[in-house]
Length: 65
Image 1 (cartoon, rainbow, N blue to C red):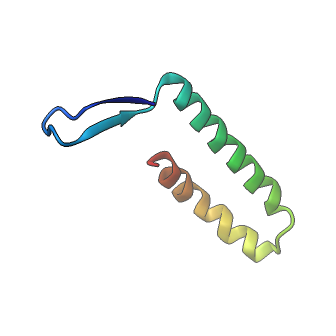
Image 2 (image 1 turned 30 degrees about the horizontal axis):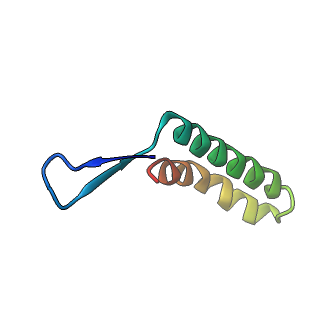
């Protein structure tokens, strides 16, 4: 994480992920979705369909975090 002054406010600071931080974040997201996909097999078919339909929206949501 890199910390720097905010460009327009002297009272605020900016935090930016380093390249290593981005790699870790990507790795964690990948592991999370791999586990979710593996867990789908243990659900009932109707539950599995609902979650599979929601996956694209969840990916977009997690990409913004």
